[in-house]
Length: 100
Image (cartoon, rainbow, N blue to C red; front, top):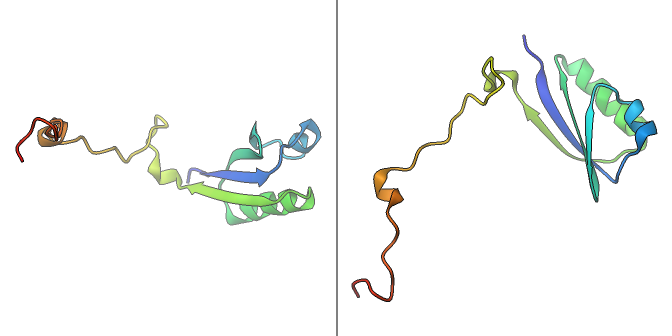
């Protein structure tokens, strides 16, 4: 089974020392928080990551879980946005020149 993708948002910006304590996560810092992204294949692995975040004094403010089955083998989402119908493509009538 393919691993699920987890995104953790933590309060504050983390530096290289804390990043080195979480080598399996990719960190993107954007004040006032840091987003950490990685994959886990078991609930125990997720618990380990959460424990290590807590042990480092980080406050997790958001967690997003993307199930492995939502992605195809090319890494693209399986769910596609619906294409608008031709009626939706038409611009709404102009309130100044349209019928009253």
